[in-house]
Length: 273
Ligand SMILES: [Zn+2]
Image (cartoon, helix red, strand yellow):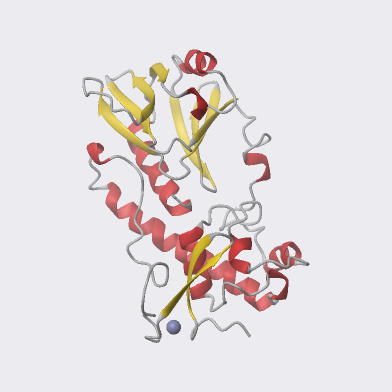
């Protein structure tokens, strides 16, 4: 599943190619992907809209249009492709945006879990799903005391808490493991037992890990080829997730399941205590 760095990379790539383009026509082939409009409403409203800019909130991608905001979540397998209109459509392409320059932006999703919402301009942050999204990792409001207050009384593993999008936005299963490894915190440690110092370490590790991942994604934008699609998976430099040996202490990495999610940690670097 794409996490914050991948969505940020997708955002930057789409921004580079699509800002200023006009949407001539939209065809929805799988209506369930459109969450808060009918297929007909969605198609009709987007006709003639100009793509003014893009932004990101947590794992959500936002298209800022002339009169609307289109809010898109890629979930497990969602990807955007830019293709020529002459190219044959495949069966996994569920929403096609025909643009004024003869190209098409196609939303492809083999598992069909992704969702799109369309809001009248200016309202997208006040409505679900974005209304309840927590602070961005680089927000000045994300402080030790904020985390300490959110963690109070929470008797669940910190790994599970990091995936809660209403506390810090954008962290998914892979980067949660990487953040806890960097912060030297055991994934099963009870959230309410974390000290203020642990909270500081989590904030610092989150910012460093996600920044690194974004900068790696950023370098590939220059060599971007449209037929490869925009999915922003640049997770080669993982230290703990899906690894076998700790790159810091050479201790074997342990895999456990926490809250139904595969979780990797180093029992030597991340003591539970
Ligand atoms: Zn280690």
